[in-house]
Amino acid sequence: MGALRQTYGVLAERYAGLFRETVRPIRRVGREAEFPIVFPDGRAGDVARMWEPLMRGGEFVPQYDDPKTPSLIAALTGADGRIEVEVGRATIELVLGPYEDLLQLEEGSRRLVRQVAQVADRLGMRLLGFGIQPRSRASSGLMTPKKRYVHLARAAGPAWWHFTTTAADQIHVDITRSEITDAVNVLNLLSAPLIALTANSSVYAGRTGRYLSGREGLLGGLGKHRAGMTPGPFDSVEEFVRYICGYRCYVLKHDGGFRQYNRPFEEYLRRHGPDIDAYLWHEHYTWNSARPRALNSTIEVRPACQQPHEDPLVVAALSLGWVEALDEARAFIEDALADPWASMQQYRHEAIVRGLRGREPVERFVEGALRIAEAGLRRRGRGEERFLGPLWSRLEQQKTPGDRARDLVRSQGVAALVESVSYHP
Image 1 (cartoon, rainbow, N blue to C red):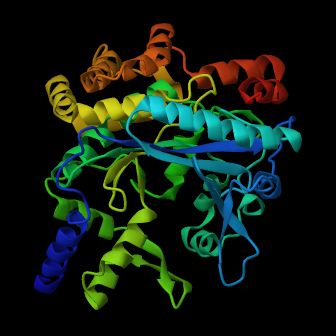
Image 2 (cartoon, rainbow, N blue to C red):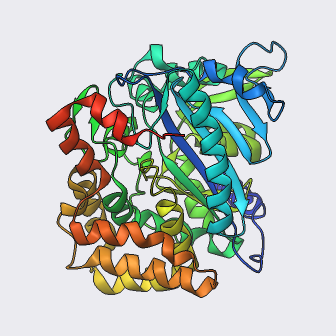
């Protein structure tokens, strides 16, 4: 036990050492924006059909799933970012940034989304501002056949297939070494109001679902706390690392390929010591609502559905504002709630099912959280608080995009929803 304790100490030190010591003059922000690709009737499209026309102009360089046998293109890299195919072959991901502010992110996002949407349109497909495939069911047939995904699917079981249909808007914000635990704790707690404000995956498998955020509701099948909010706070980086190592490690890299492991990662540490590369690989396949990313020295905020095309940066604005106001956000939560973790776990479920109509832990809690994000953005002095405008409207109307999608399908059907949430170049 003493040897394992020492291993955790060394591993945590190496992990923390990958994060920067001081923040830049202004925190940068990046975006991993996933979009469902569908045909006009809502059936899943195929991202692979888009590679050749995207490369035709010479603006993008392909990256292959296996460079030794370059048959499956996994991504294209261009001036504005990277275009990837996600776990689902009908989900395209745009990796943007980092940028110094939301205005730059807005411009970069606009250019890349337009390029991708125009190609999809020429092929008779649509790029949706929605958080899930509205018609096609999660299945093995919908999975992109990347080698790692094949192994992960076998190890994780049927819950893995939910990744084949969902589409998130995931945000990265600069943090420092000393901010790791605060960022993890505060942003996991705030995942509940974030979901309440951004739920947008209420139609799936061809019908309206029980969740307004079907993306978050369905991913709960991956196991208790492996996806979603952590069960409690962390007092140190070492405590966080221990927590992650307690999860079952699905797959490990092995001799240039992959092999199933399917045991708690701490068992690997007992045999191999503080292997930071193996830890980073394992950590990547845990999906808490806020997780530190050592490669970029960022906090990644994960639980938001992809948003309507007219509101592309609301998730980025909310996430950036909260990181800029971590101290105020923590104090707000502690003052408002006697037992923050129990209260927010309960409210998170309410938000997933009912969005802004879920019962708040205290009156006007979401409003208070939104004001903290607004103050954080305002201090940056770049006018970025304007990007929160659509969220204030949603709060006033007590209506999320998921509510509107559900209403539209009930009155006019899935094809009408597809038309409504499609990007029209």
